[in-house]
Image (cartoon, one colour):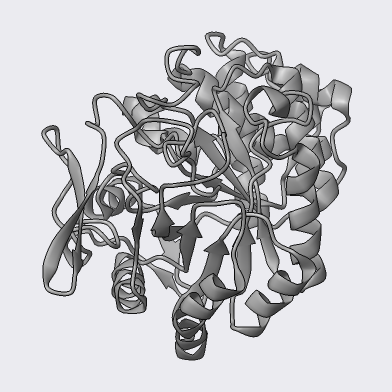
Length: 396
């Protein structure tokens, strides 16, 4: 017999249960209802009710198992755009030095991602958008990965024309990441070299080409709850497939550094929960900054409604090692799905000790994310973990 809000025990919030039952019944929440769940005090008992129901929605729509993906920077640094949070912008003086991967290095990183259990593997390039020459360079990797059929080929290449989107689809790319990053209202405060409309246009071009869409944003950039709701509703209207949730951990040298206060763990979890209420059928991928912002509450991402996460390193900073993430899943009793949807139990002893494309393991003293190239080690400078995190987001 279905449970209704009228049967709510006295110690539970009847209103949160009512809204959760509405979502579970297949009806989208309105903006006013979204404001209600966003208004829950993260230090109150109702906060745990919110997470409880977000988890129930996750299980009902996505099951108990999770997915994860990995990324590597095909082209890093020297970006023409001035996004205030990005360590790769040429407008900022950060630890990043321009570098480019070879196709062989991409393939090696892809195999490492597969060994970590990733169902998707993405190549991320800095810059406004891909040139024809850059697509020529990446095409062999994408075609081979697609032909092997062991991991989903994904691309984060910036702004896409209809022609480039079609070409990506033709070379075997299945999914494109292009984040909105913020609400339309808040976007001009973080970027002046392109517009929110430019980002929406790329998403539409990619959808028209038959590509799956991964699009979300970065939280903790000075936005308010109205901005967060706006972005969630925009993503709902665009009908994206995967929504990355990144938490800013600002990097020294970027324009935003020192201008915003880092999110507290409970507020970060509440963002995940509210997005699960608003986007019940979408894959919520918890990505950049999770271990820095959530700290000891990181494993709560699933209880808050997250259904996938980014495993390995970020764009220019260390993430946790695959071993650490597999240990977290094993301790939680949570299994994961491969690209072929086979369900697998986490095994920290069977996965690499470092994220795809990097040599060595991140630690308290780590300064460089190292990459082997042509028999030599190329050092991509990475800020000290104490100073930086996943603020660079999982996408552009």
